[in-house]
Image (tube, rainbow, N blue to C red):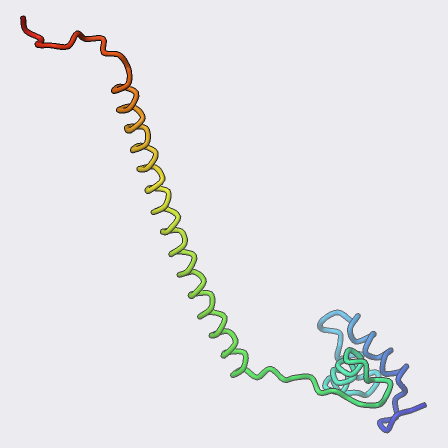
Length: 131
C-alpha cells in the first residue's frame, strides 16, 4: 500500500538501506535514481528508527545549527577545563598526602629508634666519664 507520497513502506526501507550503505560521495546518485531529496530520506530514516514508518508518521530529524554546535563545543570546553582543574587539584592533594605520609614514616622510625635506645641496656657505665 502506497502512502500519501507515493512510496510504500517497503520502498522507503529499501531506499533508506541503500542510501545508508552507499559510500560518501555516491549518495547523491541514489537520491537522483529515485527522485527523492536527502531531507526526505533522512525523515524516512528517522521515522524508521523511531518505529513509526509503518503507520505513516514522519519524524523530523533535529537540525543542528552552527550556533547550537558552537554552544555545545563551548559547553564541552568549559567542562573539560573544569575537569582538568579538578584533576590538577587532586594530583596536588595526592602529592601533599604522600609527603605527609613520608614525614610520618620518618617520625615513626625516629620514635622507634629512641624507644629502643632507651630500653636497651647501657653499654657505657653510668657516672662521670672522667675519673
